[in-house]
Amino acid sequence: MTTNLQNSPLDFSNIQTARGLSYRVLCAGLDGTQFASRLLEDALGMGDVSGQDRRLATELTYGVVRRERTLDAIIETFVSRGRSSVEPELWCLLRLGAYQLIFLTGVPTHAAVNETVALAGSVGRARWTGFANGVLRSMTRALTGEPVNEPGRRAVPLRDGNYLGFDRDLFADSHEQPAEYFAAAFGFGDWAARRWLERFGFERLLKMGFWFNAAALPCLRVNLLRVDREVLLEDLSAAGVSASEGTLPESVRLGEMARITELPGFRQGWFTVQDESAMAAARLLNPAPGTRVWDMCAAPGGKSTHMAEIMQNHGTLLASDIEFRRIMNVEQTRDRLGLTMISTRTIYPDSRNLPDGPFDAILVDAPCSNSGVLGKRPEARHRVTAENVAELCELQARLLGAGLDRLAPGGRLVYSTCSIEPEENRELVLKVLAGRNDVELQEEQEHIPGEPVDGGYQALLQRT
Ligand SMILES: C[S@@+](CC[C@H](N)C(=O)[O-])C[C@H]1O[C@@H](n2cnc3c(N)ncnc32)[C@H](O)[C@@H]1O
Image (cartoon, rainbow, N blue to C red; front, side, top):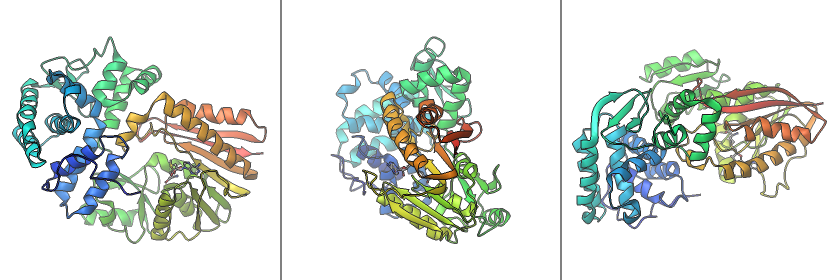
């Protein structure tokens, strides 16, 4: 699927700056049908964008999407005529300006305001200039500049437990309405905020909010069939990239944002990007070399390739997915990493071409709400809703059942998600198991976001 950056009434033909690029992407994503992350990928691929502009455009785009709800709550305080009377693209411009004023370090206030306001003229909306200037300047004056280290009506959460103080109320009171405060100040949905508050308590919830809102640094999984972790670390260090050992023997944590495809060893297939919580799934299944393995929901191939590495590239591994385009990503990564044991299959929507099996090991890495990885998926936080979760649970139960039906006697299956919602995890597994007497639950792992990596769940099941 190609994305559509033309999806806006504004004229972007004269725009060349990082702010302009980000504004264009945010405007194209306003109708909610396209992911800003994909639009940004397309936009960055179109022109010759310098490293610095690329970083700024990425930070602005991801940041505005992530903190959309927080920005809206703040902007509403400064727009007396009400949001409904402001054109969506103008509101979007205010979000971009407010994000820079509040969340971006290293950008002088006057630059944030002036350059944002100048964008209005560049896209053919000079008539917006006075209004945008007025709103952003009054926002600047309302910043107290005082460091604040606890939540409150006037406190905007920044990073690492620090807040930015305003001279007026922006949010609900954090003592009286903690869920409402959290949702607006950290930028999450009401449903998610209420249920996480009940489950984790306010202090842990705040830590989770800060974790999700920090720019997540990537983690690499070393392809130990091609290189030792020490050699990769030495090469990264020689290239001036800060990196250190992760907690697993195959993991490396990057200490800074980097263009992955330009890191040493990328083309040689020395590593792939994968968070440690995601590495836990293949490790739990731990398929033996020489066995028959099926990765049911495989694309883009992170866990298939991990399993093939664990199996020393020996045996058979079928990687299937419902999305053909994403199956091509599996094939690219497979070829880059040299994992010839992996074959692929695109599953039809009615599942009529599921493999017969039986398999010795199956991974069901189900589509989920992504509520454990909201730092990496900026749009996903707006989709963690009761309706979405209920719909996903039906699909997840169907996929898990289809996997269990294709397990050889004694075979093992890992069901995994990157969600932290019990309905998609333990409750779902127990519900499916209640309907059959040929499977035992052997082990479960739950990861809470930020403690210390991304969130997720894995259950190891065995066919009797
Ligand atoms: C969490 S992602 C998988 C990530 C992958 N395992 C990895 O580690 O790179 C879930 C995948 O399930 C796929 N999917 C959704 N419905 C499916 C179905 N009915 N059958 C197979 N795959 C499906 C989606 O296209 C998506 O790629």
